[in-house]
Image (cartoon, rainbow, N blue to C red):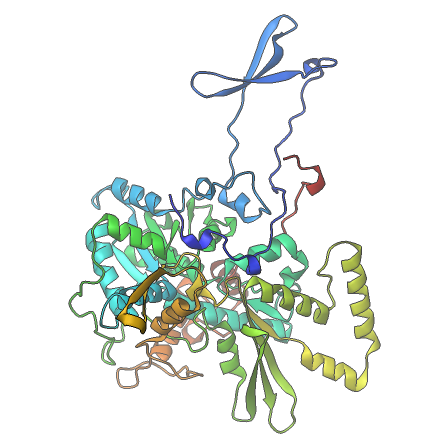
Length: 574
């Protein structure tokens, strides 16, 4: 398989060089003493005509008896790849064979008919960033602007008629639930009612790439990372559990594919945390990128530029429907999920004011809410995109929290100095230092966020030249600011913008509001899945009984753990 050109490193300004050590070292099995021969290797590797490898004694026999042992093929899984700091091969396609559009084609072609008990319902969920990328690509080659709502409805027809999917959803309602849960987690941390490991500031986003970075390089930051599932994994919960129950299907009887803007989502879906041992299935069976979805449509000669009936229809106030998921919910803030904005909207009131400042570049911003009458800081958050900014904010958060973020003696010394400085300050200085600390950071691995993900479409951008009315066509590379701007515009085009702080009033046809409806829908799903004792009265932010909260944690939260390497880099031979 081929990859997006985004994976070709042409600009190393935002790239962290990996270490030359794989975290999955070759397992060494202790051999019998008889295998050792003084002054010579005790065994050798032979390859037979079928390509199988055998370990045999150096002279072909042991004490006069022929001895050989067939060797097992070494395998590296996606979970191993998550924890890798460098690999033995650059053939990444070998590592993600089970997360590709070819694998989706293989499933669809071999899936038994619907009348068979072995049939699995194929479901596709697509992110709004992927819809925006497709929309921008279509609009750039057309005289008319194609909205993401039009793209979604065209995709629904193509995926059902040409590709063979039964259901097609966007992931914005799953994102709505993810934001509700992440706001709940932040409240628990701030009130001190959550786990002892859940510390402030809380670092969160829908991005798995930076989480892997923290697991591999800054394990001391893991207590600060949000445990709330990403929209992709929440969608997996909705499809495999809530919708599956409505369809009368068990989780293993559904094949769930997501379309995402980056390759790291493939690794996220492969985490063991998202594997159902009871049914031997994952919440998301396969992840493909926006570019891979386009390849699938090309393979079936599907034309996304062709309009379909009712493609511009919007959900009217007379149609609130609790049997199908809400679609294309807009969340004010960033095109990467609006995580920071969801908390700003909660803490910004009539008696407070918001100030924003850019630090170094547009991918690093600070947002501070202060009380107008007292001047006290109510909430301080930041938006940090790209690994260059990420390293800076990790150092800042570590310093403010008094934790060691470096390695070796220098890091330990820095930690000791920070703790001494913090403990020695008192009175006014302590309050000033407290005000400087972040409460929350929205973190993304990609510069410009999800709309600039490595799995997004590249476009043939036609630039009109003033001289001689000539036109110059050049291929947009990853990180092209002009093209990212177009995708960003497509993301926000023609979407209903809800009020900053939607109420929890009941839904009716006369007072229909997308977010009010989504909140009520989320409440019903929470009750259906968690079955709280006070289910009839529960809103998402209501603290439920112990059993229901345990179920909530298993369905809508996850865990992260440090990656321990057993390899010493200086001992690696190349």
